[in-house]
Image (cartoon, rainbow, N blue to C red; front, side):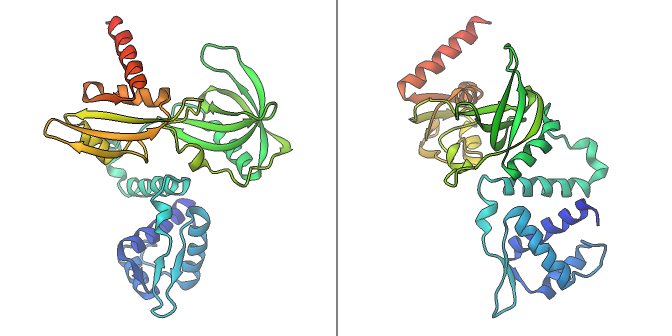
Length: 297
């Protein structure tokens, strides 16, 4: 069976159990056949057990069985609710399956393009899986290139670009490398040990985006106008975002994070729909950026 067909079946099982709660194998099989998941062929117990194992390995989703009712259910639904690779992969495959079933309208569905760096993903993922160091040739915009050996920790997609969080082998410092600025990437024979206490979620928890510099944390209050409050309600900027107060004219939100350049750029993207109230230092930085922009016009 082709991988795309298998992925479609995995996604179907997860979505069906998420929406129905708990089902016996017989109930699953009837829905399976009604939805023509495998061209009308039944869902055999052996296939179902293999799919359960694959779903656990790929998505971290546990399909458990109630020994009293013999109903199957997802025992850890929270795994698909956080900001994890499993959730991203599940969402990507779900979209892929929907679009595959709607090939007739493919010209009317537009996706964002990731411009460069994709050719290095396989090598980097292999290095992350095996804890092997990478030799990268890297060139920042407007600077000379250099060659560096790094220990790859985390891959992150942000604003249509892939980034690698890695520890430099020479001085042990953590750095972010954009894949579209990599000239070459190769595996080395040297292995490294990922610290047991390291968590990618915790590492980025105080930040918006990929920049993780020494910007100190701050309690931030923004005032939003027009339709901007609805945008922030439906797609929060950060897990710390809280709605403080709302009137007919505006809505105030608070956030606790490190206001790096990535975060400031996002705030500026809202134009006159957002105003920074505090801290005063961040308000000043926003004002300076707006004044510089005005001078260009």
